[in-house]
Length: 109
Image (cartoon, rainbow, N blue to C red; front, side, top):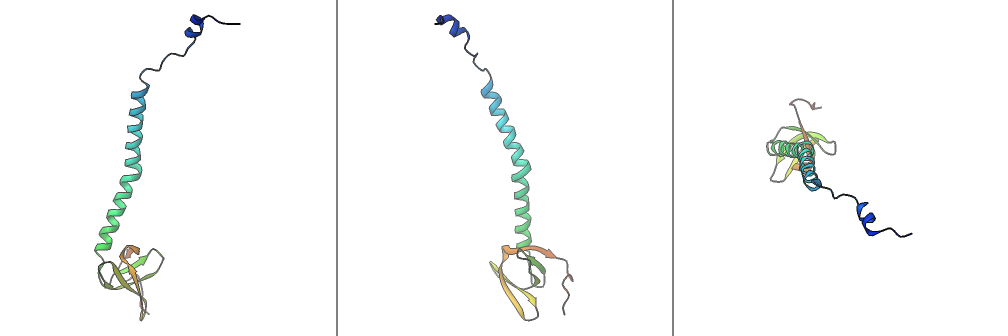
């Protein structure tokens, strides 16, 4: 049961036209959505964190990424020293500070 060549050629799928352009447009739109939904907010948070860390000063009350809360005792180039209890000081990297608390949040005992 052999089919003539003209019949088999007529059954071939038509070539897709314009598929490449629509795929490129869809990829550009998806990249734009990813930028505005993921990349841009992350860059904004990083900028706010850098500003907060650079503005640290002696006497600020901070919370670290590890959950330690204390008062800034000394500020260096890359490290800070915080006092977490009377006469108990811990040296940390500046980037480990996650939050600056309002003055008076930590009560001295």
